[in-house]
Length: 127
Ligand code: HEM
Image (cartoon, rainbow, N blue to C red; front, side):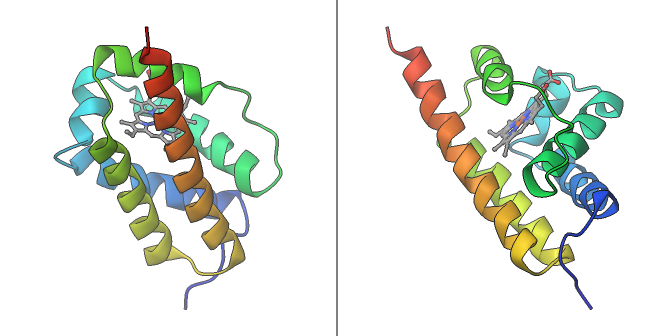
């Protein structure tokens, strides 16, 4: 039976499962592997902290995702369909593994941050 996201172990499972799918995805996978050349051993722990901070009040993440993605957008333009793909895989992964209030919060936060990120990116491109 599925339960809600309750602790760091759950976040680790969510993040690992999500990025396994992302890496295999034909549309956004190459951005991680070919454009950003992501070091997964560094990226995954960063994402555990990010989601623990978002959902478990852990306060262990202190980065600036907006800046990181603006930089990435300069190397490879991030379009609506990239953000849609990212959110679709995230929602699918949460639903596959968890159910409950935190699971719903994870999905709504992912979608809100995605919209905000995309919006800020387009604004930063204006002359
Ligand atoms: C078009 C969709 C997206 C793509 C292609 C993408 C890609 C990436 C890549 C390649 C990195 C690693 C950069 C590096 O290590 O050099 C990264 C970092 C990160 N991403 Fe995304 N991302 C997307 C959307 C999102 C969304 C919607 C969120 C949040 C809900 C998010 C949260 C993060 C965070 C927290 C980091 C770590 C930033 C840091 O270094 O502190 N990303 N992303």
